[in-house]
Length: 96
Image (cartoon, rainbow, N blue to C red; front, side, top):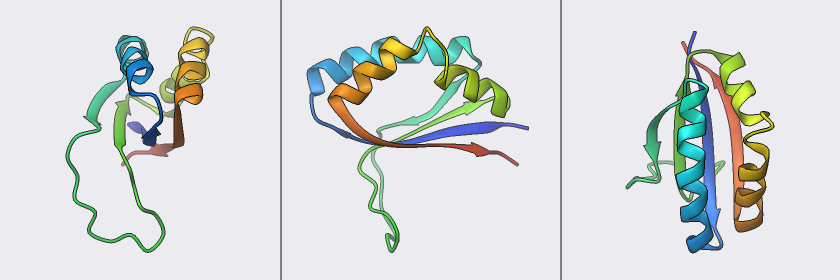
């Protein structure tokens, strides 16, 4: 069953975040990730619980692949770059 990493990001340092994006994409792909959306245009229709800023959605073959990516030692320094230059909410979701 597919799984998804959903990230809402408020970028604080665009220059370094652009570098993060270049490094993160091939690594997510190494773990089977396919970017379904990456900060494109969005229309918020309802926001009673949450007001999204910039949405990224990555599909993985399964929950374990998504977790292996997000917790991998090769992603750790790249994740630190994201943490230092953006505020994020990240969830891992089971697909159907």
